[in-house]
Length: 479
Image (cartoon, rainbow, N blue to C red; front, side, top):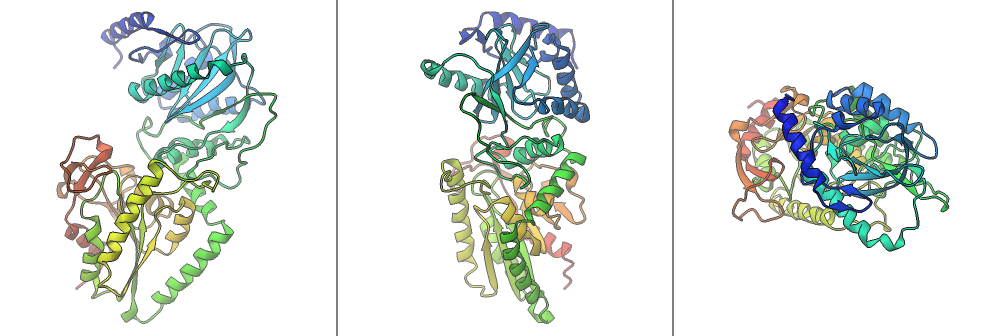
């Protein structure tokens, strides 16, 4: 609760702020961002917007952001801390998970910077005050990002040719983490009902009815925004009407892909043919999620051979869709995958190959490798799946959230996304009492000494028999 002690601490932080080093154009970067943004704003527009974010008033915030979206060629917003001063957007710079939009008044003065991360505004930087609101993401992420921006800007100073109004070119739909892409960005892009295009070279998924990467006159600079309202984490990681509509659109739009639809149709026909054979030739089609990076299930490579061995009395053949790293949708030869994304795909492929080798003694198994495919292609393939086993992070998105298949989720002792979506009937989570965390195995082999890590990186051990028993029970396999 906000109290007198909190106010005193924030006042001291603001006093320290005045002693910070001035960084380019009088923008100050404090050592720590105070959470008093709503109190410091003088503009009624910004005060209302920030209050609605802090109070988790999604509908109110959405309507305010819609008014911004409806502005035409250029974007004009009131200065947050100076009364009766209008400012225009001059440029934007993307850095990590943040997007920074630079504003100036008509004389090129009174600069301020809007920082977007998971909500429409997470922080604002200016010469008079820099701070965040009470539900913003952590300081380290925001401050590290803006420091990198100014470091790069200093190197580019020689190329600066004055300050101009920038054309609002469109939305950056390209968060590097799937969860944030869908539930922080795409969810709100859909509900903005915007006519503005998507201007991203890298995006996990975008409905086909959106315009992509338009060309603009070189006479004006351009800027872009994240399509944000209130971050999913700030709303409590709950499934609401906004998420529900987004999931339905992703699912339906994926199945409209004609070429993919033909492939999917033929594959489903083959699966149905197998399933229509006499009972002695019954096939289990299982979606199996793996991870070669963070939150690794240590026994994942041994699970499928053990499952086949124990389910032989009920199934004569098995089709395993092995899912891992997902590719950006608009990756082309002009924008090849590289860096961490390529490393992640390579690590997952090593696991697929290991599982393939361990299944060699079983001639009645077939693997469909989905590592490196797009969400659109994965959703198409998932149509023929009977059951899924996946991690409770982004690994659940295709089978659980988009395709609504029955299955089992697993994770470390503390991490679970969308626990509200687990109904314990068609979708169950492995009981945490049966999970043993083993530490951080991120990007390393499974024999290294466990290291301390955040919840998102902790790997874990679950006896394969636990999940086999759950599978048999949920499939109602009786001896």
